[in-house]
Amino acid sequence: MTGIAEAGVIDVHAHVVLDASMGAAGRFGPEIGAAPDGTPTFRVGDYKLIGVRYRGSAFMDAAVRLRQMAEAGVDFQLLSPNPLTYFSHIDPPDAVAFCRAHNDALAAQLAAHPGRLAGLAALPTQDLGASVEELHRAVSDLGLWGAQIGTDNAEPLHAPAFDALYAACVKLDVPLFIHPAPAGLDGPPGDLNLKRFDLDLVAGFASQETIAAATLVFGEVLERHPALDVCLSHGGGTIAFLAGRLAQAARKRPWAPASLKPDGAFEAMLAKLWFDTHVNDDLSLELLERRVGTERLVYGTNFAGWDAPDRAHHAPPAPNLANNARRLLRRVAR
Image 1 (cartoon, one colour):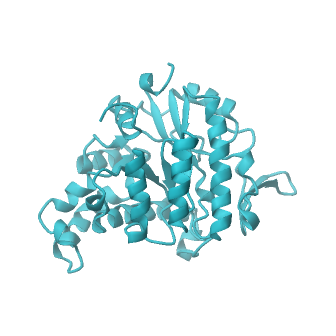
Image 2 (cartoon, rainbow, N blue to C red; image 1 turned 60 degrees about the vertical axis):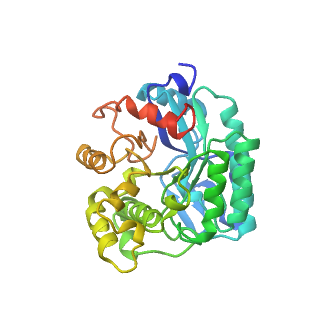
Image 3 (spheres, rainbow, N blue to C red; image 1 turned 45 degrees about the vertical axis):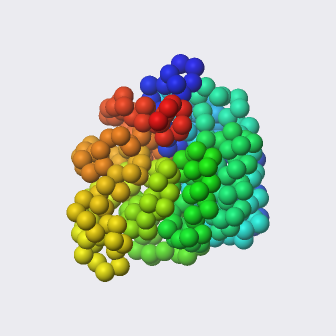
C-alpha cells in the first residue's frame, strides 16, 4: 500500500498531540507534566487531564502510531487537532499563535509519512477572519487537507460570520470536520451535571454533535453553501435517533425556515452532511445508515483513545467507506 488511493481502510478520526505546540497558547499552555507519583498530566489553562499518557504513545510518536495502525489493519489515517486544544474562547492572538505552531508541526510530521498520514488544520474560530487566513496558509502552503473545529465557538455555526470560512473551504475545495470538546476548558462551564461519570465526554459530546447538525440544517448553511462538505464526529451524536422529532419541528414550529417545511425536506438536507461511523454500537450505526444512507459515511476510530474500537470484537469497516473517504478528502473525482 503506497497511499490513500490504494488504502482499503481509511480512518478519518484520529487526534494528534505535537511537541512543538506545547506552550504556544500563552498561559493556557498546553503543557505536559506529571503528578508527584509520576502519573502523566496534560494542562490546558486551569484544567488538568490526569492519567492519559501522550509521550511515547500513538498521539505523539509517529512510529508508534504506524505500528499500531498496522496491527489494527488501518492503511491510512487523517490526523486532527486534540479536542482539548481547540482554544475557541481564548484571546485571539494566543489562539492564532497556537494554530500556526500546531499546523506547522503537523505538516512537518506528515512530510515524513506521506503514504500513510494526512492532516487537518487547527483554526482560531474566535477570529473568523484569521481562521480564513490560516486555512489558506495551511492548505496552500503546508499541504493540509482541510480543517477541524469544535462545536462550541464564539459564534454559532449558522452565524453570518461563519460564511466567510465556509466560502473559503469551498474555494479551496477542502472539507470541514466538526468535533466537540469538554465544556469549560477555556470558555463557558456548561452543564454541571455532565461533570460526573465522564458524562461530558459521553453524553455531552453527543449532545453537542446533535446540536451542531441541527444548527447547520435549521440555519440553512448548506443552502447558502451547497458545495460545502461538513463531516461530524461520532455519527452526529444522537441525530439519527432525534431526526424525526427535529423534522417535526421543521414542519410545525414558527421559526423554522420555509425551505424545511415540506415533508422530507429536513431529512433530505440532513443527508447532505457527512458522518463518521464511530458510534460504538451496530444498532446505532444501522439507524444512522437508515436515516442518511451510506454515501456520506466514513470510517473513524478516535485512534488510541479510550473509546477506540476493541480490536478483538470489531468487525472490519465496509469497503465503500474507504471510497467515501477518498471522495470527501478530494482524492478521487466526485
